[in-house]
Length: 322
Image 1 (cartoon, helix red, strand yellow):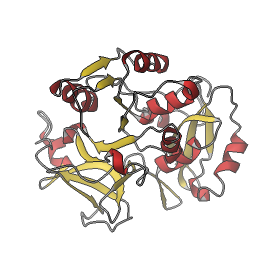
Image 2 (cartoon, one colour):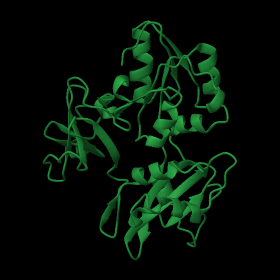
Image 3 (spheres, rainbow, N blue to C red):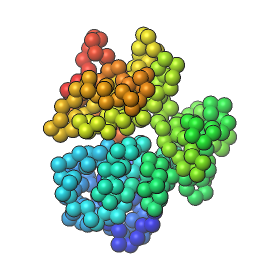
């Protein structure tokens, strides 16, 4: 992504986040541009700063862009100064991509980790329209593969764990030889993320390996379910986790935040999912909540959701609106 001297970058993620520091703040300063730093993420604040400073680009995770699009200010907001939007941290639902494309806004989606300092793949703006949902091909000097559990290469379109090697990859974890040993196979860093690679080399992120669950012997990737849920007009945010089930081993539990002025009906949601997802992927439990628990970088705290008692179990759900 070509950062120019006339760019105005909105740094809306915390600076301990590798993308905010290394992909937004420092490149802009090095190219002589201007940065606008938000003390904390706020939808109205972002709209105000974009208009006041004529922001040309910004980084955000999926939930931040979803919140902007769900705001009542979205239809009339002056976004003419924005040239491109950088997104990472999790897969982006195609419904959200198309929402921004209708406003003439382009997502440059990337994939990486703090351990890959930070990028491993990147989708350049000219390819965004023809590769919706892609995280792009590998970046310069970096090799990326999708592998099976035996570390053989997955076929194009076959889900596999992402492994990365290159000069950008960390040599290991500070004072933790065990974690370093577990993370590497030779010089390949094991990310713990699941993706499929297309024949053109583009990577499509499926989900975190630890977030996948198995229902009736079939793998379920929560990100896929979340993307379909997000397409329902009453759903502003969605998070799906696997929970124990006596019949199927595990089943899905969806936590949904309603869109402004909308009401979520569990029966309507299941009817919406029927035909769009295989039956075993449709969550058995649907919780309507006011908000999702998040980390400082706005990612959903899924371990916290998995730890909540199931409906009817002893204890309280622990999320407002559950």
